[in-house]
Length: 145
Image (cartoon, rainbow, N blue to C red; front, side):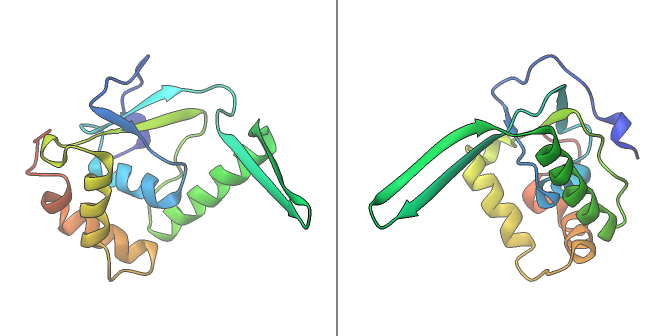
């Protein structure tokens, strides 16, 4: 399998939720496979950075768009996690979405099921093995959506 097998679409319908830019969620996308995951081109960093500075006089904060350098660092960290699991690097320049199985009803319930399956894993390779072997518990029967 290759990341190239994951469909590129113009927009995600409501059955899909956007994946966070973490190695954990990229690993989940890899195991779920291209039948359950789509991607949308994102030529510029689209993430938001929120910051808060607390002083004795109070707190101040702000929001700004992620820089290209920050995006590169995120991609490098994410791909390092995937490499530790033996998975090829995920291509940059996309937003990734996973189709939630109907039986979960919400992203929160879905991620709770994924986390229960992998609760005893500490390393990416272990999580990969458990997610793969227990795929039907968090994703459903093969071919189900």
